[in-house]
Structure formats: C-alpha cells, structure tokens
Length: 638
Image 1 (cartoon, one colour):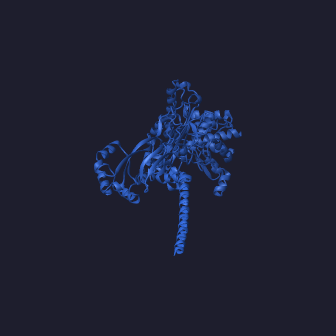
Image 2 (image 1 turned 120 degrees about the vertical axis):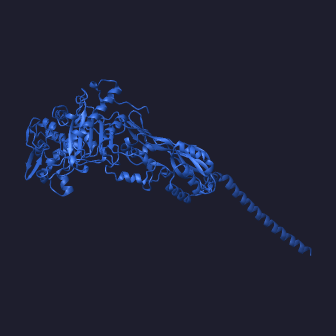
C-alpha cells in the first residue's frame, strides 16, 4: 500500500515539475515577447500609432503677386469668405439651405448641388455652399446663426485682379485644376487649389505657386479632426514684376474702346520691354476665378468680336502697306535698287493677263523710294518686287521679326506667315507665280503677321538691333529671380545708312505734307513720330465689280467684309525710344482710324516719361536712364 502511495506521489511530483517547467517556459517566452514589443520595437509601434492618430495635411501657399513696372498691384490675393455646411450638425439640410436662401441668394441650382455633394461625403465633412461672400452677407448670416444649424463661415484666399478687363489678356486668370492637369503633385489635389490657365499666370505658374505648408491634426478612428497639433505655413510664390506701365495700359484700353475689335502694342525699342499690350473687347478674369457660369461662358465664346482672344499676340492679319518698309529694305540691301531710282505709277501694272491696281486710281506718277513710302504707292512695290524676288523679301522679313514667334512670355503666340517658293511647293504642292510676288510686296496674299510682330519690326527698324519683346522686368523661375539688366540684343546686320533711308521715308509719311499719315502726326516739337499706314483687304475685288457697280466703300459693306486698318510708328523721330502698332479689325483706312490711336499712345508714353523724370520733352533720355524699379484693293491709302 505504502509503495503504491509512494509511486503515486513521485508521479504527481514529476507531472507538477513538468507542468511548472512548461509554465515557466511560456512565461519566459511571453516576457521576452513583451520586452521585444515594448522595448526593442517601441519606436516602430509608437510611429504606427501616431500615424493612425495624426494626419499630415498640406496647406496651400499664398500665390505670388504680379505688379506693373512701378509696383502697382495687378494680381493679388484677397480674403475670401465662404460658407460651408456639416450634415451631421444639421437636422434638415434642405430646410437649412432654404432659410439661408432667404438671407443670401443661393438659387435652386446651388441648393441641388450642395445636396448632391452632401450625400456623397461623410456626415462630418464640410461642404462648400457659396464662395466670395461680402462682409454684409457674412454679417447677415452671423446674425441668423441660431436658425442655421450646421453652417460654418470660413476665411480663405482667392485671386483678385484689381484692373479687371484692362489686363485680362496679358495677366490671364487662375481656375481649379482639371483632371488632365493632375501631375502627381499633391498640391494640385488640394480642394480649391487653383493654377494659371492663360496669360502670365500660366507662363509663370510654377514660380507663382510657392511652397506648400503642412498641418498636423489629431483624428479619431473615423477620420474626424479632433484638434490641430502643429502648423507650418508655406512660402508664398515669387513676385512677378511686369514691364507694363499701368497708366499707359489703361489709356490704351480707353483709346480702343470706341472700336468693335482692335489691338495695340507699345514697346521700348532699346530693351524690348512691352509697356502696353491691349486687346479689345476684353473680359473680366475675376469671373473665372470665382467660377464662371455657363451663360457667361457661352456669351464670350459666341461673341462675334472674340473677347477671349488676345489679338495682339494671337491675331494674324495681312500687314498691308506696313510691309513695304521690309520690301524696300530688302531691295536696298541686295543692291538691286537705289533710293533715287524712279518708277512710274499710272494707277495699275499689267503682268501677263492680270492687272494689279494701285490704291490711287489715277496713279502717283514718278516715284522714288522716299516718295513711295510717303504716298504708299503700290505700283512702285510691284515694280521692285519683280526685281528682288519673294525669297529675298522673305529673308528680310524674318530678319525684322516676321514669320516666326517673337518668344514673348505669353502662351499660344502665333508665328504669322512669310511665304517663299519652297513653302508653297511643300505646303500647297504648287509652283510660285510671279503675280503672287506682287501681291506679297504690298502685304497681301499669303503674308500674315501679328500686331506684336509688326511692333517688333518697327522697333528693329528704329534701333538697328534684333530686339525681342518681353513682359517681365526680370527672369522669373521657381528657383528665384535674376536680372535682365545685362542683356544686349545683337546687331541686325543691316546697313545703318539703309535703315536711315527707311526711317526717313516713314518720317515723310507723318511729317511731310501729303504724306498718308500726315493727319495723324504729333505736332509737339521733340515728340514727333515716324510711321506707316496700312489697309489690308479681307475680300477679293473682282474686275466685274470694278467695271459695273464700282468698288464698294467700307461704309457700304457689312462689318466683316471691311478692310483692316493698321498703323506702325516710332517716336521721337530724332531719338527713337518707343515703337507702337495698332490694328483695328475691319476699321477701314489705316491713316484715319488706326493712325490717331498710335499718335495718342506714343504721345502719352512720352508725356508720362517726361513727367516722371522731370525733364523737357525735347531732351528725352535713352532707355538706360528710364528703368525705375518697383518698391517690391479698295483702300484710302496703302
């Protein structure tokens, strides 16, 4: 019996020891695991816990400012009050919106849109009801807050253009990012973030965006924000200082406002700075920033006068007689003609079976180069173009900046067209005809140019330099701003004597009696301008029309069939500083319509500079002294 009890006891003891050993092993393993998790891996799991608890969010940076050459604000950021609604805090979303509609105008479309957005988002996520509230509207909503549960008034920033339509085509506008514009940059995916869509806003968008800030917020398991833990504001974008003179720009828009459709460019011929660039009619870029309505968009798109188009840069026109300086200079440089060589104008020139008419039916008689420019005689250019040939004319046109993009810092610039024999054969599969050279010599036919190109041509004729226009005082990149001060334009590689002869002819146009632009001359001594008028046809005048009804005048034609009016000029004559081009679509005669606008713009530019520098008009300084920095064939004439 005793042995049996002793055996049972030893068995129990062994089992107890084995069980105890097993428990010891398990406890040791558990302790080791806890040590591993809580000590060795503590940093890792603390990070994972924080990632669940803390959400890192990007903060949109303030967009960089845009100013004129003297620091006047052109594009700024203004405080934008907007109202939002939180569904979980509102017993009845529709009822709350209907009450709000009685306090500030919403409209049925807005109410439907908000209800749709609310249904798609989590109940605690705010949904924007309306942007750009006035202070009066904010006050009214605040007073009625007890009756508007779930509504939140928040303050943000939105782009504002103080000058509105005056600078719309140059500045452009910003708007929300579209799906095709997403590049993977998380900044672009922020709600309400806007980017440049046109103009300078688009060209310098990356430099204007700035660097995003960050915000650390504590959230619960559902993602609801509990509190903000830390905030680091972003860096605002670079300030872009434009070459534009705001006062001159306003005046340019004012002078074009009487026309249905027109454009103007004023440029410094020494440094290429564009002082005014206007296109009429225009639009308000603030409408795009705030979200343009379908009705307004359709009215802009379907407008006959194309207010959305920047005609100064994107509009292409037959240059008409403003092209004659290019043809004359090509002949002089080739040594094919001389300034005193004369040709007789009887009112037309016959080539084969075709007759090419001069704008003056009775003809001009004997014409040399000076008089041909002064009177804008077409037959003179018919004659010399046959000797020069289209390819030599085209080469000079390119040298003067035509037929290619100027490189101005604006999007979608058009290159115009300067035809050659090879161009026609490649593009149209046809041989060049002699009569086409005659038509091209007076800036018609295939020849096309933008107002900016014509202003560049005028600047090069006046300066003898390969001037290139630009709109910013400095080079602006996302990395920073560098000065243009040291930039020098190369020489045009054209005889200074021949350039002087062309300028003398342009002087005759405006400052000699019977010059085609004499009526538009500047009469103030020391501020006189030298220019050239142009009238380009947009319809073909048939021989039948000439022989039966007679050529119809512009006043007898619908607007879209009237001639374009052009004028180019530089001033002052004795010490050229400014170049200007005006194109009035379907305006009629260049001298009578576009000429006075050019005169007024060049006079205004000189008066402004004279007043700012405190000097006499007769002693205008060169461009180096004038660089203030901001504080931060139915035609009246050829």
